[in-house]
Image (cartoon, rainbow, N blue to C red; front, top):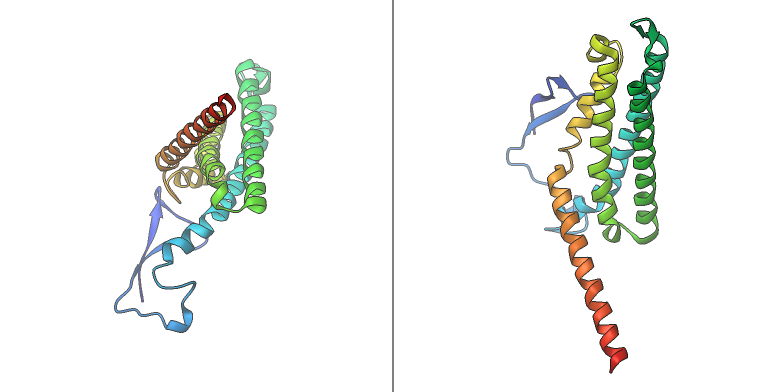
Length: 209
């Protein structure tokens, strides 16, 4: 096992130690270390991806919440053209929309987590896919608005907005890109809708006969 090099994401190393390119040359795993069974690697990975995606979304919501707190403090303290930023209607709308989007994502994440706990990962896949699309995009958009309000400071390392944006943007790819989740979610919803309509038709035909 050879550590080749740490890989950067958006020109920076992921914390705490980055993700590495690793070379595996003639590596064997002892039979005593087998998990579940041969050929079950994908099944094992899928089993942890649901809770892992929920964890990503929790972190993203935390980043968005902190970003909102930074924004509120900024607009109260920063004045332009003779009045503080919080007096401008457009700025108040940004703050309000950000709050709404965070709370929507928070509730969707809680719903997905609750469903995993009560019915299992397999039957929660649609909600997991939905939040995995919603949370990173929500955080990206809110951090982008905050950077605009902070100006040059927003892209510096004096505050963590640039770090938040990098993390949120990368998580739109990690554990599957948005497009894959949307494709699968859309497919599942259509199949469920067709089955529901067929069940209704079967019920109607039974009642009629």
